[in-house]
Length: 403
Image (cartoon, helix red, strand yellow):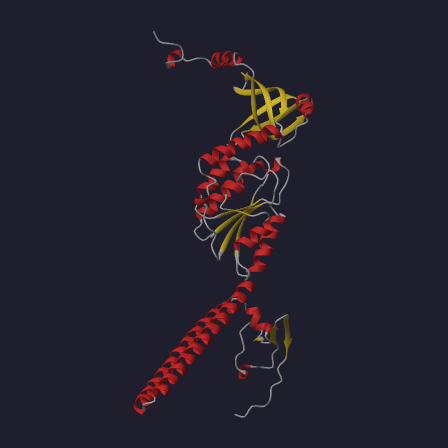
């Protein structure tokens, strides 16, 4: 016997299928569901909203009396538990969730869940020190994830370039709070992780309320962070109830400004350190020369005390050779140290063309931008002269040239 709906000949009419579905759904019980209100629109006495899952990109649409939402004092972005009654709309074949009651999820409940998640991730080893990657000594390109036109973005870039002017940034401006924050931050992380040119990633936000920082304790986002091979700096800038991102990231910075200090060295400090190394090296060489000179003097005295003229003459010649060789080796060592120090110092100094201008040099260019290196190339046309603190135009005074 063929069951209804199993063959083209026994196909259900649409009305009958819709009625069967409606009959099944009408037997579903009321259910409480938790999530975040992504949208909340009031239309007369009715309210329409979207309830998003807190951990994954899933949502359902809600509808109910506006008074139910008003009594709960909720708004877009609130974490809530809603009591729903599924309803089937046979005319257009859609499933609707009618809201019967709304309750906000308290901070205490959220803190308890965060502590449970913290214990779970710690047990899996996501907080372990041995899995944390060291930051590069001098990153060439930094991936910065921050809010749109945020103070955190300004703080990181400004302070990092002050310390090391040649550092470059690839910036991803995303939502750093609200229902789309986890998705957008995760997408930016994956994009930066796939870029081999990025040496370190900074996630920055200038603190905020506890609820605003919840995306940075999202389990899905934390697992994306733990799977990255590029070192990650968490710079959320929030001390109390700090998000779990601080524990999973390779380095925690207390503020965006602190993140800038951690990702790049200070050029002035490095130059001073280089000068100190050079000074210590010269002092060591000088002390070595003094020791060799004193040893030769003692040897000469010993030979003189031996008295036999031939021994004295032999030792004198030997001393002379040793002394010359010691001096040659010492000078060679000094020259090598000085050459190495000069090369290193020149490389660091060459990184900043401004230092050349600060010493009084100037760059002279023609109107077309080409640099003038020979006074015979001058014409009566104005020239541009760039000095340390700006540039100005000048007109050459040409003297008559013979030939």
